[in-house]
Image 1: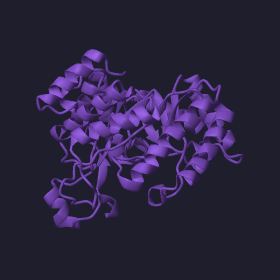
Image 2: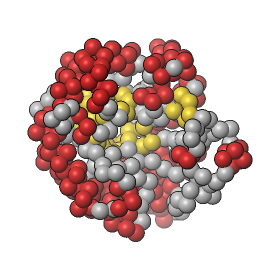
Image 3: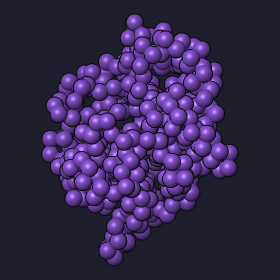
Length: 344
């Protein structure tokens, strides 16, 4: 929601007293239950065709047992080609029958962040948006759009690209099918540039940047990734300022604030241990990396933090690391999460 005049004046007075904008945002009030509402899914057309209705039905039933009521498909364009449309349509029908809300991603060109070509990106995503709208505009399972261009903050050419692309994508999505438009940004905790030459900014600047971008683009829902650099030594005290910052940004920009509580993590006890093992590189360069499902007691802490600030919670990492078919660790995680779900 947008700020009332009373809230704005309170923020202005707090700022003149030396307080940060995000620190003067509305206090956290425990907005949602600390559970996962649905998972991020990279659509595999060949796998989906192999599964058929029976296989997808089993998968959706397993997700329902975990309390999932949404399916967040990042790359819907892979399912809407003439060759792949039938299996994707079957999946959408199964979701409708189960009252599962589906978020459909508009796709990205490969290495878009290296080219920053607004015209090319908008042409590609625009075709996907039109194709999705043509096929699913009236579909009961189609609940929201998803813009999959993940960013932290942008400067220079990157910011010029984002400031042009995001409002144009939102406009095309709304014109195609009037559904909420979502995005899932991240934040960086690496002040010392251990994991790459990334520019770091404090939460106050993060709050201001996102408030302005949300307002300019007309975004409806912001689903904040919660893990920073995905390391299991990241604490809630480290995350909290960015949740506060994004809460302010959503209030000021007029969007709903959701959490993306990630259920997979890079296992390493400390930043110093990471440097000793791998050097000063991004964790994506470590192959194979020691990824694992987030232990449920630690996941509970992450969910409880998000629930303080967010209206709902989705998650990345289930498909790759937490589905029972993945292995023993995933099966153990599912059993532990079900116990947590029953006790919450």
